[in-house]
Structures are given as structure tokens and as C-alpha cells.
Length: 327
Ligand code: LMR
Image (cartoon, rainbow, N blue to C red):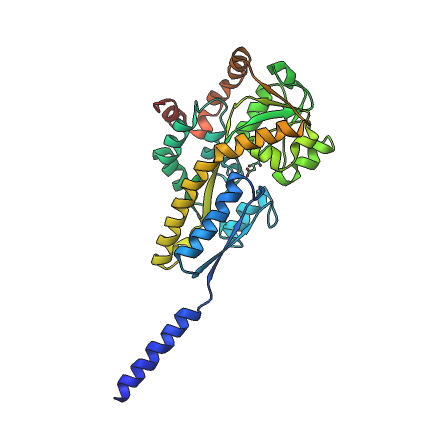
């Protein structure tokens, strides 16, 4: 009898402990505005993760570089100061994983079908395996979209880039891309681009329109060219030690939340960019120019040699495997 009541007390105690246990906190830091594809999907993940784990996990989303800027955020993740990020692929180079720059190669992906086949296939798994060695676990690939160029002068021909200081993300491929156009590349944190453009530290930049509009870059850029010359997307990553240390049931619920958030993200990205373009048009601050086929062919001719330049860094096989994907 005595042992039965002792057992009951132990059961009650463990029940109350499990009910009142503090939730696991996931700090999810990112650098863009909340009303972008990445910003919205981070919120969606929060909602799904909290629902599926019945409150055992709490996700705190910090947008707009509130916690960390580009370079710092990956270091913070490795140190365990934040648990989740979604940096663009261009941001992994400084961490020593250069293969992600595959996604920065200009005119590599003919459309998003090929792109998704690549990231969801063997190439994506290979890239995530590289991250593992850095104490980082890859969870998903999210889209933004194809990038457009902007400046305070029309950019129709390759020659129009001559001498322009163009802000780039921290990617050697993007550096080579700007040089191939005759521009001067300048790495700058995303959070500093608006001021950099406003003060003339840089003359122009490239980004999908959703980023351009939500950072108000249209206020400081008179011309935008719809060139779709390259892609910007994200790898959603977590701290490996944190992830591996989670209770198995929580990890599988978070995996499900990430899967659903990823589907959501990919379903809204294109529309967000289309809507942003309409808003830039409506703001009447920026002339929008669509490259003609001949102009696009000339850009392509100038930029495709960048692929060969990076064969040794990214891997010839990796680049070839993209060429081989059937559209
Ligand atoms: C940039 O720095 O231009 C982008 O990577 C920002 C982002 O995360 O979309």
C-alpha cells in the first residue's frame, strides 16, 4: 500500500514537472523584413512549431538584423547564441563552405523547376553534409527569387556597369560577376545597403524585388533592370548540437513544421516578388526596364565565363550536375 502511494506521488510529480517544464526556446534570427518570403515563412514555422509541439517549443523570430547582421549571424549560430537562421546561399563562403556559391552563378538556372530539382536532390544533400562539419545542420531550402539590378543610371548594356560600385553579398562568385560586367564589387551587410546607397558609398545593387522594396531601396535607386540574371535563396540552418540534443519526438514535430513552412514559403515567394514589383511601379521612384532578348544574350555572354572560373572552388561535377538537370 505504502509503495503504491509512493509510486503515485512519483507519477504525479513527474506529470507536474513535465507539464510545467519551461519551453525549449528557438531564437530564429534573420536580416530581412517580416513581409518578405523569408520573413513570412519564419512566422509560419513559429506558428506550426508551437502548435505541433503543444507549446513545448517557443520560437522567437527576430527580423531585420535586430539581433545579428549577415556575418555575425552564422558565428552566433555556431556559438549557440541563436538556434535557427536562414542566410542566403551567398553567405556561407566566409564560413569555409564555398560550394553554396553554386547558387550564385549567373545564368545557371533556366527556371525555378530546375532550381528546385537541384536543391531538393543530391546536390542539396551534399551541401548540407558540408555544413555538418561546421557544427551546423541544414533543415530546408527556401526561395526568394531571381535577382534584378539597380543603380542611378539605366543598366541596359554590359557597358553601362563600367565603374559602378555595386553592393554584393559576401560571395566570391558575385564579386567575379560584377567584375565581368566592368563594375566594382563591394561587400556590404544587408542592413547597411539602404544607407550605403543613400550616401553614395555604393552606386547600385542586385536583389529580388521583394528585398528591394521592403528595404525602401526604390527611394535611393532611380533605375531597375529586370534581368533575372541570378538567383537568391536560403538555407535554413540550425545549431547541430542543439538539434541533435532535442528529444526525438520534438525533433520530428519540428521537422514536420519545417516541411510545411517550406511548402508555404515556396508557394508565396514568386507572388511576393510580383507584388513588390507592382509597388515599386506605383511608387514612381524608379524606372523599371525589362532587358530585350538581345541585351539579355549580351549579359549572358559576359557572365557565363564566371562558371568556368569557379570550377575548382565549387566543383566541376556540381556545376555539371546542374547543366544535366532536365527542365
Ligand atoms: C542580401 O544580403 O542581399 C540578402 O541575402 C538578404 C536576404 O537574406 O534576403
